[in-house]
Image 1 (cartoon, rainbow, N blue to C red):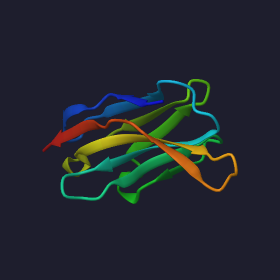
Image 2: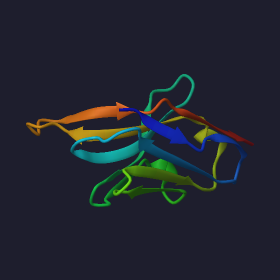
Image 3: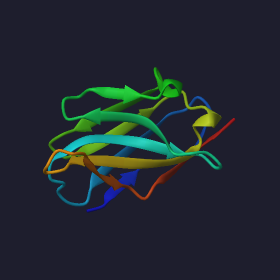
Image 4: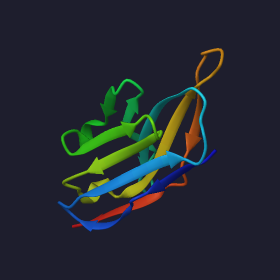
Length: 120
């Protein structure tokens, strides 16, 4: 199973982009979906996540600008990014976490990454 992402691109500061991500097949016991990003020379960081109950989590730098949403029926996750800044430039990776059968942790699935570039 692969996560298929769409929606990256080049925009100017202040503009918006919407990312989407869906698995190519079924993921058993899927629980959390989210987006990470990695800028050149920096570590990958969690941008936003959402669980099956709709609880969300955001990194402080995107609060008030980004919104994560999920369609549980389609196992699709979206990231609406508004008021983009040059520092948002990074490769954005979709992530899905499936609960292990013994509930000791999660299996991680990753997308191939989509480039988001924000010019000043």
